[in-house]
Image (cartoon, rainbow, N blue to C red; front, side, top):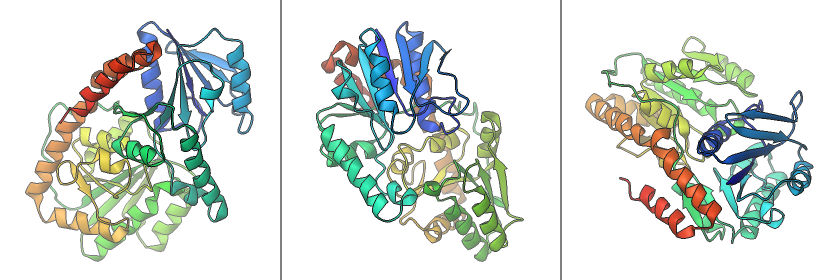
Length: 380
């Protein structure tokens, strides 16, 4: 069978992130099963127009404002595909109206309040309205999402058929869970792009609150991005430069080492599709303390594998970390449950079922596709 992924970015794009990582895993699995797999994305400076990786044919053409037309022109010259996956990142590809075959909408998160972070004022409201209008336009198109939060958000916007299938995780859980007592200093870590919607400044402010309470805490910030200079300046303003370490971007091995070393992952994003690094931290024996937002309330089971704070504030984050530090047995039990749960989200568990699900959609066998979704939903 022939599959096409439409995504504004491909895995080699400098702006590629978690969405591209998981999309690559799914498409790579289809190619390994003998299918023809193509991935169409935007051009970027220095990029070649086409390349092949892991059996996937990557095509690049067009830029913001022109890539939908470029995709349509390229598509007209291709043999018919069995399934087109229209991946939304704020704006869709409108593929159901030009691909002439079966089509799935694929969305990691409904942006909602994220529009206002990047586009304050009227532009943010226009973006948010456009997103909601797009979902209404796509209301009869079946959607694929990675979390129950995104499923609920799409249904609230009128989309009729939404299927939840979990993402997998590249981080292999530790073979054994060694003790990690909450001895000072309390080590916090945040792992993300340093972008406004990730609100890493909240993690720094939470550290300040903890230290004001007399908790000897440290924070490691893993990742790079446009907010790095601002965050370093904030750290110096708060006189925390001796207690905050910026690693910049690191490879997978380095990231896993930082996650394993930490007592807590703190995640303060405005919204996530799933919160992959929560599961990565859990696999390294580290529970997460997260904001009560879409995605993070799915990847973290409150009181079982981590803690969802009551409010989106540094004070609430610091309060939960401080409280847990008073109950080391609760912490030890929680990190063990988090480590055990992370095993459910290994690619070896997820990919076979999702591949069968995509093949069922490509054949037009919705009954089989729904049975596969039910098998995921039935898991504890």
